[in-house]
Image (cartoon, rainbow, N blue to C red; front, side):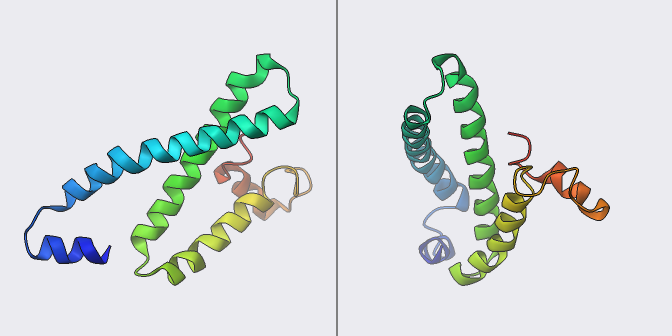
Length: 123
């Protein structure tokens, strides 16, 4: 982020160039890494082959949701420490209200809305 500030302030290039370069480089690398991780976990799970496309699709979707969420938090925060401070409660709430730790039936009435926004609950 600091390098981008210096280079855009000196008018070397605009912000969309760094965004395009990050998209062309970081997104494919992240997708390959996530796909490899999903494939390894699927092989260890012992699920039948018919479920591979469904499990791969949903798991990749969850990866993209959390990657986008944490990218948004990182863009908002001025430094890494504040980004971690902001992201930790979000991740904790989404992991807690996933339907396994706290079920929808066991949750208090005022927490029912959290299940609707938790990405882990819908997988």
